[in-house]
Image (cartoon, rainbow over all chains, first blue to last red; front, side, top):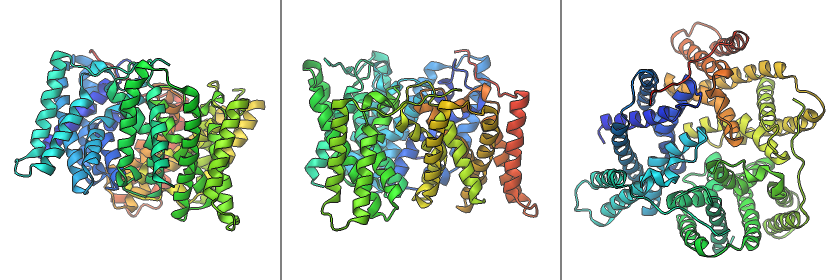
Length: 203
Length: 203
Length: 203
């Protein structure tokens, strides 16, 4: 994973954390927390569950600097300009793809089983956003149909990556393939409004 | 602890996670997350606080499979049949008893003090449900009187277990006794509507 | 850090956890959880991210006893007397100052970089309160302007401490200086109602 791509993904998550604060009376500190939590929350849970401590952002503090500077910049810029929401959706899909596969890769490096790699990949990809939504008192976006296969794309790409890695060692760059699967699925789901069924009960 | 009992307890927690999603517009992915979090959330916090990493469900991934399959089955079944809520309450009390004592036992194995064993036992028993309720934007059920001594039963049974273990080594199977205490207290509290006092302040 | 000061800070946090329960129908167990989470939540996240496990309250269970006894006493007392809210604000500022600097100190002991020491210091100081507010379904107090530089005071004092520690080794007791900075800033912010700007966006 080239470092600039990691910083790009962190920055995108940070922006999504800041924008979630809109209209809630959140001050500058709250915005910084939301940015940081969205960017590093998923990977932190992954590392803590694996026992890979100190967690990644302590081992590599530059990602926290990227997240905080991006949040500061967004805090200022969003006052004066409309944010390019469509471009952000695409950037966010890139971030989701990257975080998910990085999470699955790290689990495999720790010799964990395939199902754990998939679960920790998805946690890395989506848990930061869940914490962001909990802090903003929203039902997590990834639990809602309108989000169009966000976590589902992460799951499918993660499964594809793990299967290729385990059973098709001759295929080059399984991680890149997994990322492309997530990215294409997510973008297709946005364009054609693909949804998962909603839970419905008789009780 | 027989493995089938652990899988039973995990399945019961997973069902309670799914049912909490009712009427909230949560999609299939959200249901799976709620099920998993309810089933393994408490034990994860326990392991992470103890330093027992990788956490139990990474060491034993079959519990995540049980939780996910149970959630899928409940997702389908709850559309067509009324869930047997009374039977589930009893099953849930079994799960509470089991998780709590398993959590206290694990702490004692790590040579922690009695009070820590009680606290980690209760965390193992109730924290998954607290996270479930936070994700669903509800005041945690275990904080409410109407829940009838849920956490209190866990606390008392956990104290009984630790006391027997420490001061009455001749008594056989203290863990089983602790579980029975929790189960009976919880069921009695449901039947006779026992409650804890609510916090009330003058400020 | 003298132990009585640590217990004092834990007790103050526990009281703030209990008072957050007012008017929400939270029962005695919920009050104990809120007290414990507010008192030890921030330090737990710090220890888990650092890999300093078992976490501090397992290594030193007496702080949990202090938190639980304080919560019980508050539960009883708050029914009959008005709580001295002003005195509590000052006590809470002392607790914030202490927890923050203790958190930053511990990070430096683990050889982490300055920015990580500041971040973990602030987490130690404010994260317990954030979890308390999430459990009570409130927007975290520290994200709101009306809280008057709570986290900002922690950040500035934490930065002052780390800078002195790193670049001015001849200055005695940098930790005490950092605490005084936090305490004075926080109290001044309350008196003169200093605020951070709120996030505002055009989207």
